[in-house]
Length: 177
Image 1 (cartoon, rainbow, N blue to C red):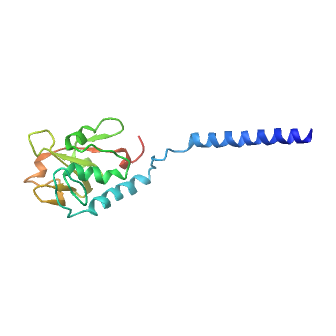
Image 2 (cartoon, rainbow, N blue to C red):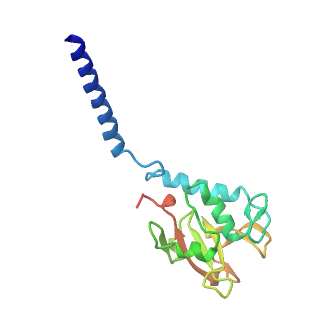
Image 3 (cartoon, one colour):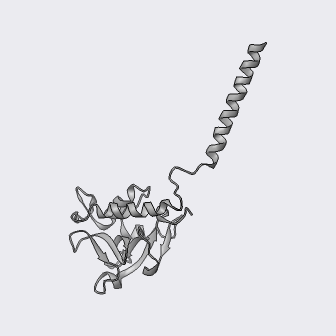
């Protein structure tokens, strides 16, 4: 009789442990969630990743440091390590703003490091994309410059008057939406 009780107690104890483990995981944050402190690290990493390939040649359709980048291939490559699967099109990246958990930013004064920035450089609404890195600067793969470079979003001759808006992705937001 004692062995039956022991087995029954062991089964009950195992069930309680399993139930407690399930209960704890219900309150755990998802693997890809971030905290209020973590967004700063994500922004810094986005900027560092972009800067790490500065000087990489511009290649139409390019998506890697080895093959070269076009503008949307560059932004897509930078964000790939942050769980963002960006389309390989600047206009499609622009239209992500305001959809799902992404946020649209219209004013340059409201930009934050890591925001995708967009410019009207063709007959389409958006023809160029880059990543805001602070202090009025953005990093991008430029066909006219021939490489990944840093430019001013306030440039009065080219990028300044062509600024369209920005998309802020959840990974760089101050808190998970």
